Image (cartoon, rainbow, N blue to C red):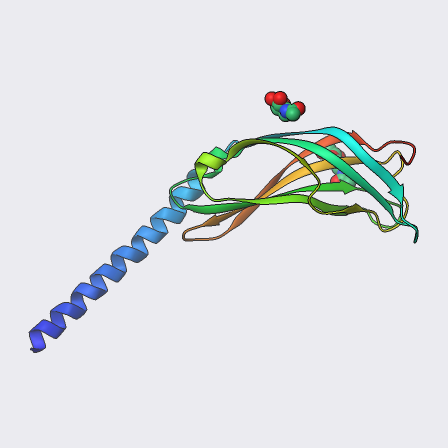
Length: 167
Ligand SMILES: *[C@@H]1O[C@H](CO)[C@@H](O)[C@H](O)[C@H]1NC(C)=O
Ligand SMILES: *[C@@H]1O[C@H](CO)[C@@H](O)[C@H](O)[C@H]1NC(C)=O
């Protein structure tokens, strides 16, 4: 009886040690992976561009978001959370960041895609700064691992500009 309990305990300790070791190797090998994600975003259309009655600018865009994020997936990757944001400067704020679209990528086979979509979240300025505004579109990602630390990064695409006039 004693020896059975002792052996079961020893086996459990051994299993837990192996598991901890595997987790350490998993997150380590994950750090050695140097991913090379790519993205392009094209503005296909300005659907409308208005000043709201209470004074804030709002614009509706149709985007073509193309990305290849397959290299972010390793055997230790659970899923990716991604979002596209418009980022621009105003006299009040050095960085305004407006999230326009997001998605969860559950597996590597969905990590290479091209999606034609209007902004899922409203692009509203906290004022009326959007006419002729130059802005960047950024694709941000958060990699959620099976074990170890989450990490995040982004691709910045610059050179976008909103129209001079409301329409
Ligand atoms: C979206 O962009 C990709 C890559 O630039 C291109 O291959 C595709 O034809 C575009 N789709 C539309 C609807 O413009
Ligand atoms: C937009 O991108 C350019 C080039 O990467 C960068 O210099 C600039 O600071 C960015 N603008 C904002 C508001 O983040």
